[in-house]
Image (cartoon, rainbow, N blue to C red; front, top):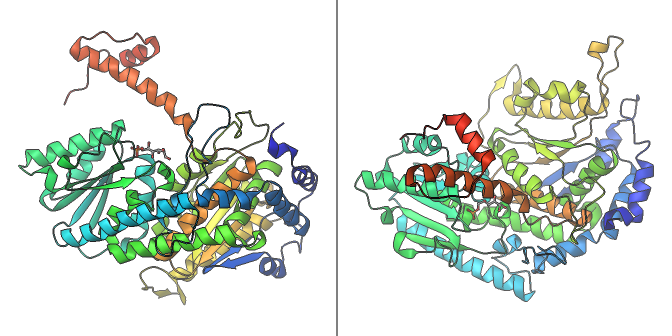
Length: 531
Ligand code: G6Q
């Protein structure tokens, strides 16, 4: 049996799960309960009175964290122990130090590996400051080319901070190898004034290298020298580490995983361009404050740990297979896409850290859209469907622009918050009605993370909160949240199919692949795509 299954807290929680609080009973959800089940830190409030827990369950969840050594594992991670590994099998063997990317102002981590990592991160930061000063006034648009971890996090941050962008600075992202992605962006920009940041840690990713070639060709066709426009963010000594081809090169390292890399230069160059170096520092400071909170705050007040525990309660004890993350903030409309990768690539695992098949459920399916938009589409299923979907709701007391309008004596922000709070209550309590069509069963668990205003510092902290929620869950399940073997097989087969396409032009001999050949035949009737 897995180590998770052996924990005594797991047994107790299984018993407690047979009769969790029933919010549909009159008086079960009280104002006192909402006030009691709340944790406050760094300007955030986590409201969890609408999770199906009580004091006994909370106590046992905290016991689970203790038994699984969640805090010790967080300390090991942040100090640079090589936790990215599967014992006894060929695997990655790396430290996990995205937190060092933000421990750059006060170097709080004294452990030598973490300290050395924060020092190299600091050098890149100084390089960035210098670079941004040097290019001041030369470019109006920036295109970031990258995919997966080299796209989703930075894109979510850039989109979320649009009101903080410097005047006359526009951001664009190309990720998909679909030629329409690159063409669509190229049609929008004046290349003369465009900076292109090519981001690939490995320097070998098919989509990114193809898109780089695509965009370089567009520059050359216009008589522009790509060396004056292209910047590389890559691993040292990767195939992309060739300064002769780039205006500047910035580095990332093995100890920063792709989906955890938004606060390295993977996000730094483009965000620094968009919101300025000081704004970028604010993101790092916010993330660092949350890192330190996750590391040092006692479990009962530790926001990402509490969130991880409620997720585990819903997943392993109430057996709910998905989670919807719904930000009541239009600015966060790309954030669920980032969280899908962060959570599902990290915790979508079927073996534990010793290579044994797990006998419990690991990471849930994560999905989401901003509220209130979601209320007008999939909330029907959430309220009355046959599957229970737990929700993580995110809200802010103020809007980003500081401009609002009273209509019918309430502002838009008040309308947004009213909907957020109403949904939380409606999902939990439901509605009794003799008419089955109007009956809402309730007991849809949810929690709210509330903050003041979505500015760069708050966003940095929010990003880190989710990174640590995911890490804590992986620690408790005793799985490796930092590799991604599951994305390799499809890549390998895509290369075999590409060889089939290529061989039609070059006549070279390639290994046979009957299933791939069948798809080629069906899709094109042997006609190659034309330019
Ligand atoms: C993230 C994954 C993956 C990665 C992309 C891009 O954790 O490793 O999404 O970020 O495949 O990789 P490169 O940065 O190497 O191009």
